[in-house]
Amino acid sequence: MALFIADNRGHHHVLELLEEAGAEVLTTRLEAGDVSFLAHGGISVGVELKASDDLLSSLRSGRLFEQSARMILTYESSLLLPFGFLTVTKQGYCRTRTGVKVHPPWPTYTQLTNALLSISKHGVTVLPIAPNKYTAAQVLVSIHSWFQKERHESLMKRRMPFAMGNQDDIRAIHIVTGCPRVSVELAKRLLAELKTPLAVLSASQEELRTVKGIGKVTARSIYQAAHAEYGKGNGSHG
Image 1 (spheres, rainbow, N blue to C red):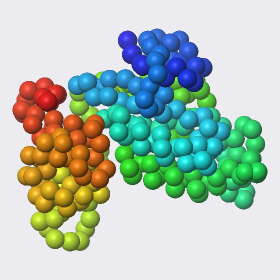
Image 2: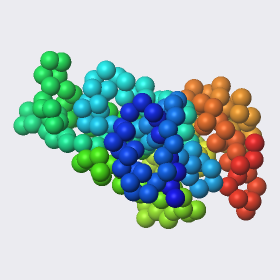
Image 3: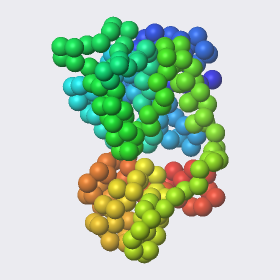
């Protein structure tokens, strides 16, 4: 049975649908996100649910980026699941079930797309917009099932972070981006501060957290990955 921990401040209709689908839902006050659960190996996963009107208003106010930042610091894997009716007008403005907001205006569809791409780049996986609450609940169940699998084979080959440049730098970035939650940009900052991949992998959690962009969760993930004994489970050594 899928077990979800849900924030008790909203999206009750989606939570009810989760229970109807056979999931167990426990409610509490979450530090970030609307729903969380544990993946295979004890990895924490957080999901931010965004109905279309809330998605646009939170983008307009800047709250969407603040919530995404909290998600990244709180969970080892973060996802954004927008849902509900959302189309675009001929002039490029977003339209929801409540229409097109003019005063103050909704963001344009281009602004929304750029914001979602920015969030994705910084570590929050943005899922395709679900058309309604029923789809959103089914997507959550599917996400939970996917994360319970021990291994996932990808059709995509890992690519070089950039095509040109010093080959030693490229190799160093490849090594460091092999750590969980480390993007190319974060790898560059780690290497600029600690100088070598060996230093990054040998650093304590406290040393890792001195690097801009490294929070408690990311530091712990890197440290555990670097100190996990090969073939000994999920690498939960502290």
